[in-house]
Image (tube, rainbow, N blue to C red; front, top):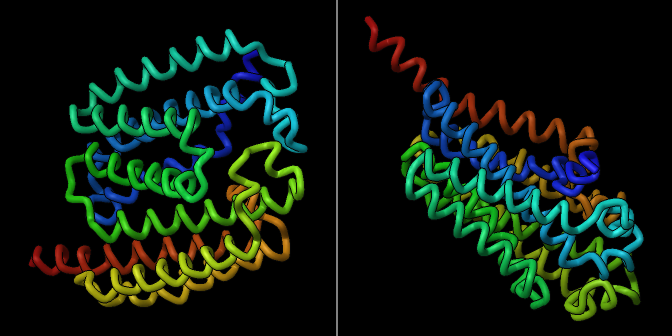
Length: 293
């Protein structure tokens, strides 16, 4: 039962909460140990919230998941796990997460509860509305990013909000396309709004979102104080195009975490991380060093 509950919490998807660390990095506080403890605690809280939401979503979708070729193997859909136990565990997770949020600060508590309510409303109703389902997923990622800044009381860049929203929308569109191709004519039986999507429509939306994301990130690098951030633009473009290649040729769109198994994407993410941190922090280190003389 314990293994089934952990599986239902989908820890393999908790990497999505890593966006909480964006604020501490881009606010140039990467060496602040106290802030790291706070943001790590905030990360754990959002993992608890995410885990409880996945459990509740599986309970709500138990019948439709049984019609899905992959989701039917989940503990709840397969009958290996009882609903009562998982629901009680999810409630305990939520209580623990809300309590932890209060210990960080009141604004973080507010955004944590807001995120919880948004995802609950999504699971119950909003995910059945075409296009709205995609926007809500993207807003959920933005709320995570904002929560990371609120936890450590730093200014939240509007560029972080815009780029996070567009990147999440890009990934959500890829996932919808994968589901549509996987389920084919049975897509509407799994979720009604899937029948309203089409590959042509999703491809157009992906193209628009990709262009908007590239432009938004490029503008961020133009307006940031350190112009060397422009060096990361080609890396971002490669990463987006590589993901599109994987969607169309390798059928990776269903589970974005599969990207970590692709060497090209993995190297791209590592290179971007090294370049971004180097560009942001090397001038700061040099100035502090010279200021010591």
